[in-house]
Amino acid sequence: MRDEERLERLNRLWETYRLATSEPEASVNFMPEMWAKIDAARPASWAFPVIRLASRFLPLAAALALALGVYTWSPRSGSTGAGYVDMLATDLLADLGEDDLT
Amino acid sequence: MLVDYEVVKRAQSGDPAAFNELVLAYRKRILGTVFRLIGRQEDVEDVGQEVFLRLYYSLDQLRTAEVFEPWLYRLTVNAAYDYLRKQRRQPEARMADLSEEQVMAADAAVSGRQALEEKQKTQIRELVAVLLGQVSEEDRILLTLKEVQGLSLKELEAIYKVNENALKVRLFRARQRMLKAFEALEKQELKTSANRRET
Image 1 (cartoon, rainbow over the protein chains, first blue to last red):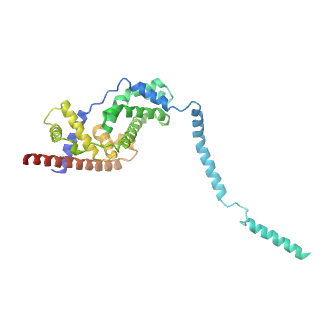
Image 2 (cartoon, each protein chain N blue to C red):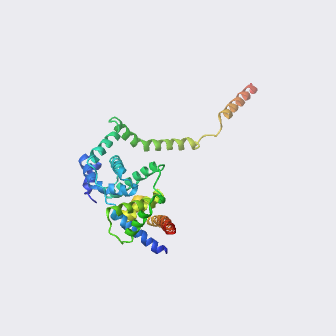
């Protein structure tokens, strides 16, 4: 059987299937059970404002963290780039120099 | 739209009566879609309630009332996916589970040789369930939405959030896989008939 014929039969199958599957009616318990599930999933009353506040502050906190990260990572202007040990060594040399002079 | 945009907006603002109105308007359509997607009558209401539960808690994320229907379909598809994933480990109906009589009766109905009676409707449903059991969940859902629910490419684009070309490719591949399953079923049918003639 050629592909077109097979596709045609498949299309007919879909059509027949559509006729064979009517939309089911909901039972009388559908609405009460649905509302019970909605109520069961409802967060505690105190949690609502907390969640809302947290969701509003989340982008702000992320932006702040990013800005701090960039600030910490970037080299500061005016800095010599010398480390703590280098500074100690410079001071020591300076002290030694003064002693030698006296 | 089965309801006014105003009802959607009122439901978004937390009006339970408006939400009830939404559910009553869309309940039948959603249950029908769920039934065709999951193929199990006994679990249709559970999955349908899950869809409306998700709708209730996600309505505030809906940008405009105009996109309500694709949004609801998307929730339906996701709930059906979740259900099918949970059911994955359970044994599914296989082609070999269909009797030759069932296949022949369904085949006759498909060929339009017989009017659809209740028994044949059941056979058609079983045949399609078996065929859909041979393809992936993604294919099953896409084909059901397109071929059975009759959604347009535009509507599917809104649900799947992909462009038309990508959707056409997906549909083509899904149809090919379904055809392959159909072909395998026909081969099995021929083999069974030949065996019966020999004996």
